Image 1 (cartoon, helix red, strand yellow):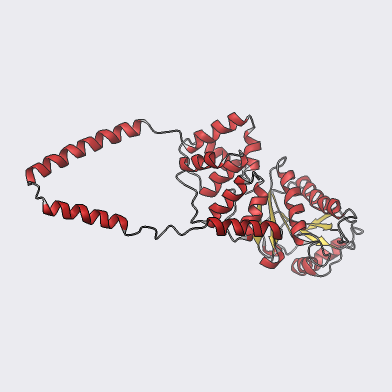
Image 2 (cartoon, rainbow, N blue to C red):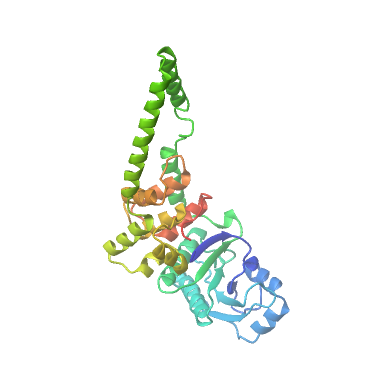
Length: 340
């Protein structure tokens, strides 16, 4: 999956590069900066001493030393004042410059902390949105797997208003369908059994009736198999053509990697996961009915007994097809994310 939000210690993530939210001296400090320096060992500080510091919004690269990565990319985030002193632009630059540096060094994967959201006081919801938007824009033009690592639930929150809106939508639509009319079918079966017991059916006639029904069922099955509808893969490729977009644009907007898309394109009978199927529906900006149709091709459905499904429905009905924002919300509600 090109962009993943994970709850993990960034020093434990195995990838080509991790990003250090550093101070301008690059010599270690508190928070993520101190954690990375301690995990990497003295060699990291010795190399940083030769870099001559780093300005806000810029990025510099070193080796990974004792960390499970090849490189550490150091970037200096802005200190939050009031949002009217270029903080957003500087934070965007941190992510963009780090990603460009990773690309220059041919990194295929990179992990970010939520830059400036700790001691520098940048509001967490705004910090996350800036991170997701900037990384998302980069991934539309580049192939790379990007992680945003958050250490605990408290360090990650979507906007309070959005959270409340989604929570209210879930409350209004969530129903428990698992026990609904549980006993109706058994009662109906028992009623038919009682009728059969009251009206004895001769054995020979019963056998003939069974054979006739079996032949009819076989013929019906053969006819049905000849009329199989288009597969998920066929519908996906048809919709891509109808929308007039490139394959790469579709799978990038779906947060799907190129290898998985190639498998789907080459195998007419490919069965995706539900999250992958929905991701493509989001990328194609399908309506709710079209999304349900695409899910049916993959053998799934949307249900009001699933919070995951209701959150997806919420964003589609709102016309918001930004998969990264949807994944923010899914993460906040402890649901699986969309994509590979």
